[in-house]
Length: 238
Ligand code: CA
Image (spheres, rainbow, N blue to C red):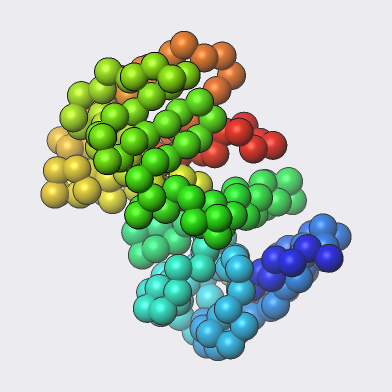
């Protein structure tokens, strides 16, 4: 039995059933909730490891559930939304969600997202690579926060101050999707469109320095129209 317990918040029976069967097949423990009220009650009573949260709930918007859970817990929340509009996902991510799935999604996609969260939790559990830790390691990337230096294959990366800050923000949130708004506010203190445009430029140059010399290694995932995510690269997945 997988020791992970997952709270599934979904009011649509076929989708709830699909997720439940998938989790059961892969030996995950799970709890079910059909509305926001049940979701908050289950989350606070059982303290699940991961929450799959539908945004369109009958009694409240899923974003409200995220706000409520974030009042007391950092449990990973993966938003599930039928709405293809990026605004909903961005709002959910800015409220504190970690990742998202867009309906319709495949079972493989659901399991992949879950594995990313498991690795994120494993890192936090190990007490490594938390914001308080002074050294970050991921694949051949190493950041020495105290020294303010980043290394790739033991060679120091020549980063501009903004590229370095960008790398640190992503690294400290490995596994989590960060919105353009979140990142630009961290770097420039505001999220104007011009900052988002600048962010794209800095991200492109950072990426080139980070991934240019290596084949098949991709540290930073782009979420078009939404933001970026630092991936753990030395796990089973890319
Ligand atoms: Ca729904």
